[in-house]
Length: 77
Image (cartoon, rainbow, N blue to C red; front, top):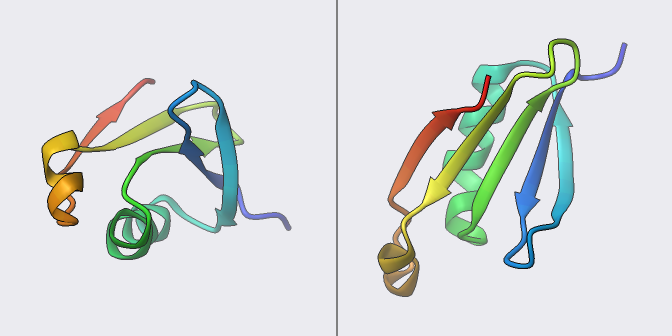
């Protein structure tokens, strides 16, 4: 069975780049907050392939300059 949660990095030009698939939403959130937002601060989209629900995780622009992610989560469902 394929992992139903896809993580995408949202590029500044409006496109998205697939990062990886993960088995559940809790692990997907954890992966973005613990690894991606620190290693590559950006906005990330988590897409549930089964339901079509989307969650966007945003890092504040000011915090990126300091290399300390300040994150907010918003659902587009």
